[in-house]
Length: 160
Ligand code: THU
Image (cartoon, rainbow, N blue to C red):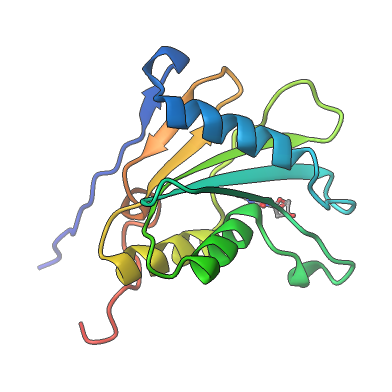
């Protein structure tokens, strides 16, 4: 007899009036660093801004390479740098902004699979969810309360 294992996921939509001061600052940081992305191959600019539980904020962007798979996404860049420098400080939330170069509009962006697995790594390290907030072209933030939403059947336990 076949059964189903179901997991329901949903994103919340936060209009700007629902944002915290930190959300506003992180969004501005993500937008600003996005403009400095090294993305000559895709022309897709991504910025990510991260809040740690000590209050510090970090930002980074995608860094592409002529050997395409070598490129690094904005999310992994900022997580590696921030946790590398502050190994005791827990990532609280990450805000992501993206757009096609020369486009007037922000693109809807959700982290790629590698970045989801990387966010998962830091949820494991700190035993705490990381909020993932993605800037939508309409100006709202799409909010996942944890990587579980984006990677429901994820690999997170070597002993399970
Ligand atoms: N990219 C990111 O930096 N983050 C994402 O969430 C999606 C994709 C980058 C990788 C590559 O440099 C470019 O965007 C196009 O895929």
